[in-house]
Image (cartoon, rainbow, N blue to C red; front, side, top):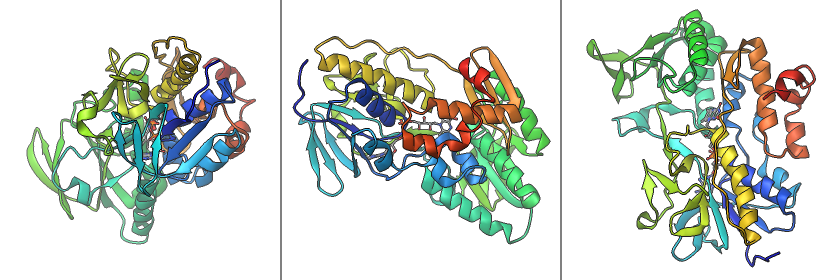
Length: 394
Ligand SMILES: Cc1cc2nc3c(=O)[nH]c(=O)nc-3n(C[C@H](O)[C@H](O)[C@H](O)COP(=O)(O)OP(=O)(O)OC[C@H]3O[C@@H](n4cnc5c(N)ncnc54)[C@H](O)[C@@H]3O)c2cc1C
């Protein structure tokens, strides 16, 4: 076996980073692994809607990195990467820490993309991380105490927009008049047909207004201006939530260093960065050559993390890495309190059963689950026996 001199450094411990770290440690317990993240807690983003609606508690969806990693002997440091020079093999962090590496994995996820539309950054709420969730929650709670039928706009009828619209309607009933604004001619236009149909009836049942073929031109403090087939219309608004897209979080990159595609780091099928084959980019920040249409999801991030763990172990053993292959395991969306829709691997399921199955499947997807994670997810495991048959088929 070949020895490595420096730790394997993983920056970003979301779905991709967490998976590669835990799986690599499992494959080779003697490897020194250093994980760095700017936050103290992992955020299980697909369950942020349930945290908002208080169907699950904050700690259940946001376990502490320190607990998860110390359980398995991985070193965790809380710090923010501010500069990366691949030419010099140097990482710089916000408190002047500098690190060198033999192998580097970067996976710093996405941030909202306001598409340079006037007023969006200043006047919209977002729903991409835990701080966004807290800000939105605080606005919604405060609004509860004042007049009803407040005008709430959600921009983007992808999964995030739809899931938020249904949850907020179920939580606050007539407190808000909810309007969903979508640029294309249908909701969930990149998703499975079954889920789209279920989402359409969930929106209809909740009397959520859907504006298709409509794009936001500007958001001010009091108005949202929308361009549609009827022309340009200015609406009064109380709140606009922006879910119309994300972009890779790569502010720390030196611009001329790395080849990109659609703003994301282009990696080869072994998940290596061009000209820097000891460096890997996975999850939302990267695009795999020849697999440009893969969705930007936790499912992809985790499969890449799992594959990269195997490739790193091969490289350390002096063997050739293997090309990544994606397996589509289907998709799940929540549709209001206690309801969801699932489509994939020949199974379609909707309503309350789908809601319970979705939570259970998320627990099963947790990367080589540790004891602390298991207890944090106890609410899911309690239901495991009931769903065993379905669960085993996924
Ligand atoms: C509300 C919501 C719901 C979603 N629902 C689903 C779903 O149902 N199914 C699905 O498959 N996908 C879903 N997604 C998408 C999914 O969450 C992402 O695709 C996934 O998180 C990407 O994994 P990642 O590891 O690339 O990034 P992330 O999981 O976002 O992790 C990035 C990590 O990097 C850290 N970081 C960022 N910058 C720095 C820095 N400079 N220095 C150090 N650390 C840094 C962050 O703190 C974070 O921990 C959802 C996303 C959102 C926002």
